[in-house]
Length: 292
Image (cartoon, rainbow, N blue to C red; front, side, top):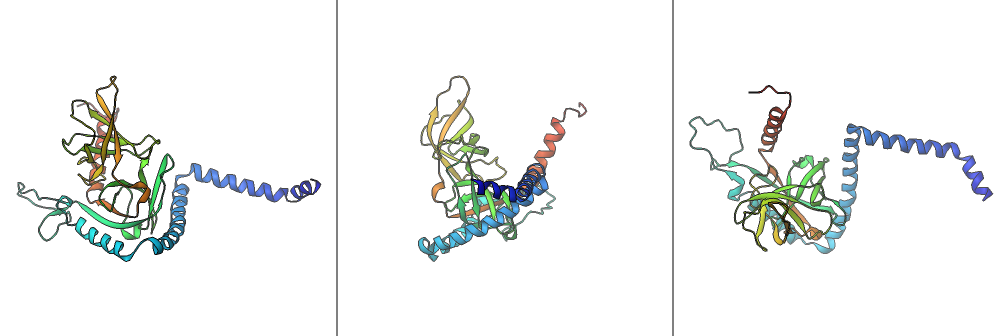
């Protein structure tokens, strides 16, 4: 015991210095947005490198070249699907269109990029997925992520040069605009942090006919996801007579415990849409604006 006390007394200055350094770094990270962003980028890059090496070892044993080849073929087919394009408006006389068009003069709306999952979590309330693609490969925040079969997975929330972090649908802060496939009526999909096999669809009026087994898809009103891709199936209807809106249990379509290859989807009109939405809300909802 005496030796322990002597050891602490001898190195007290060093331990005090170390503690103060840790506290100063913590305060710097917690209250400074710039340093917080820099730390997240460095952390993404470091964990990405570690996860990549681990995934390469795992892939050596469990994945073959055939899976990768099929994923590349699937990527090409995804980008050729009709719903990734918007038909040109022939009712306009003046056509000044800066949007990306293909050889058939169709306007491309969505662009699919393949990626591999190198980290995934499903056991917490705030689950994230890490991909082996980053800003150098064209990935940016707010892009949606689909599984290889087209089912919804999440939205990119953080990007480094070679890696990206995805907020999974299994995250208590995630909210996605979805719709019933058979009627087109839309609502908001979220998760309560409890059962990873059950998502919740809220905001759907009780006047809409719903039954167990109905397919839920991404909504055409979403800025992030392309419309019509599977999100899940209705597995139950919560009884609540105090409201005129459903609370539906939805079984996810994506296999969250076994994600391997995904598509990162870019809405080529996202910046324009989100900017218009933000500016409109600021202008219309500003309490100081002049009445008209």
